[in-house]
Amino acid sequence: MDTEVIYNQFMRLVRQPIFWIILILILVVMFIIKNLSRGKAYMKSYEKVENKHDYESSEVSLEKRCPRCGELLGPMEGKYGNFLGCTNPKCHYTELIINKNNK
Image 1 (tube, helix red, strand yellow):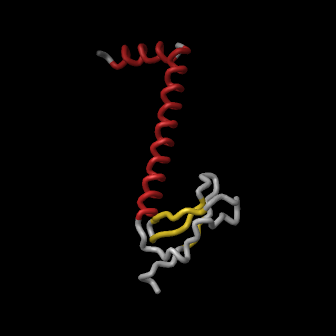
Image 2 (image 1 turned 60 degrees about the horizontal axis):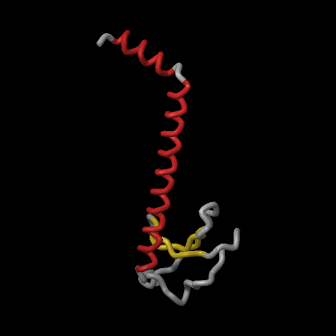
Image 3 (image 1 turned 60 degrees about the vertical axis):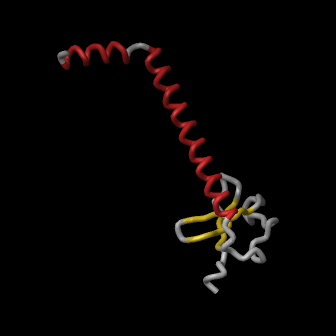
């Protein structure tokens, strides 16, 4: 096919309202899937750190609350080690956990 023919077919398609509706729906679905998978990855890392016990249990209170929003703080694992992080996804408060090995 000639590029001009392909271009003309594409331009006819773009002028149709159904094209834009389908495109927007595809983008919304992709956005939702991306955010759902990010949430699953967050929960997996939360469970992985929760199962590891390389932090002092006496220093990590199960009822410790976030000073910013009041939600519970949970153990998490990051690039530089373990830390406590707010369980509220809109709040990004973190607190360092001192490992047994670092004392």
